[in-house]
Amino acid sequence: MSDNPLQAICSTIGRISVSLHTNISKLISITQKPHTGTNVQFSVSVPAPPTATSSMLAADSSLFQPTEKVGPVTREQLGRATWTFIHTLGAQYPEKPTRQQKKDVKELMAIISRIYPCKECADHFKEVLRSNPIQAGSQAEFSQWLCRVHNVVNRSLGKPTFPCERVDARWGKLDCEHRVCDLQGSMTLFGSQTD
Ligand code: FAD
Image (cartoon, rainbow, N blue to C red; front, side, top):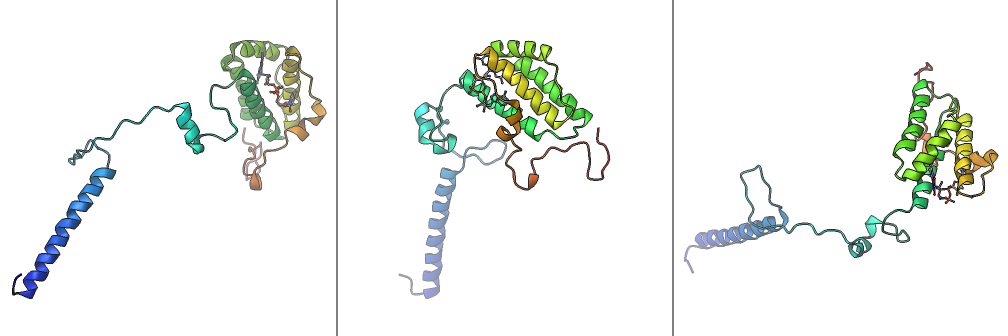
């Protein structure tokens, strides 16, 4: 032990400083991933991310709803999801659509008939569109047309048809606070046409 109390204090501070430095360095090398493009190289190797398996997905509750089946989507599930999208678009479609919006829904239907990920369904839908040209002059017209073409598909699959007078009750406007989900129609904020 030194006789000089100041020297003892300095020595203690020095030891604490070395200890802190060592521990912080260890901590950084554990948490930091290797990074290229800088002069700093970290020697700790990070294992490659494991590939996801069903059991891993099942373990990570944030990836799926508890009741949801993990695996490929069936034709029925795909159909229900697509009809939900299409009829919701019908419900949200503006009363006075712009020329662009009318063009967009026409193109969307044509695209679905080409790229819908079930070839048999897509081919059939092409025929349905050919014999039922799209009507999208207003929200009512478009949602009723959608109902009719969905019924054509229903009939071809031996399913009951849906009463189209109930389509607004089944597919009302999107449940969305303060109408922030509404599509802009032909009126801008300044009251002029936007098409
Ligand atoms: P869906 O027909 O999916 O309907 C979902 C919900 O919509 C119903 O529960 C009902 O509440 C409501 N609904 C039903 N009819 C109407 C209507 N007319 N108007 C408004 N709402 C309605 N499957 C095939 O096997 N072969 C095909 O060729 C085929 N073609 C398809 C083409 C398209 C463009 C789409 C989107 C789907 C197609 N499907 C096809 C899938 C098929 O239409 C059904 O989605 C699937 O069989 C599941 O049927 P579902 O009985 O659950 O109800």
